[in-house]
Image (tube, rainbow, N blue to C red; front, side, top):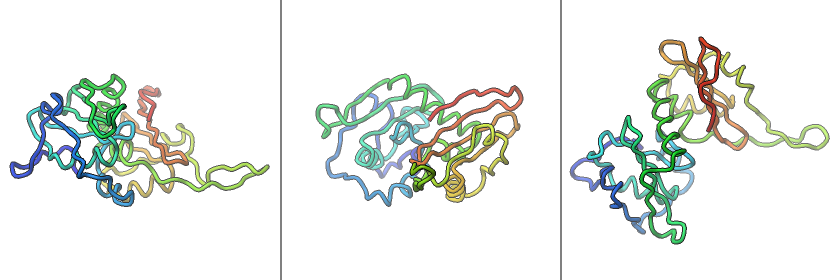
Length: 226
């Protein structure tokens, strides 16, 4: 699924401006797909707070409405952004009536920041790096019984210091391969083209992703979060 692709003239679509003005209405004929299809359907999609991000090249470029409807059915809503800007809106189930859509325009400040950060990660480290950091979550890790009967994950990510000192992954490698390596090792690292910035990615036992932007030359963390 390419959330940034505009729909053709033959496929009904909605523009960012139309979404911003409340044109999106839930279509009850769309239902959530089986969980086994989600990874493939949203393979390259970026997420924030559990909802997919649709990026519009301009506020007048449409995205196929069926993609928006399916995302609403699958995740209970989505975010939309005009590329390269802080124009971000959120559409979610109405708190008092989940059968209708509620618009938040502009989106909450933390959502705006998170959506813009996902876009910036792609610009700095590449599309695949952004998908690993902000896309589909990692697989879960089984628990094992340790000393004194306490349970702990069978595999855990190393410290951030170890992650940022590790060999960086090739951002041009196949995305499915990169995701497999992240899930197996529970961490991954990318660097920018200039070799001045490091993107560390850590996956906990539940599959939740944390990422950290690190300034290599100055030895300081620029951002840490989910």
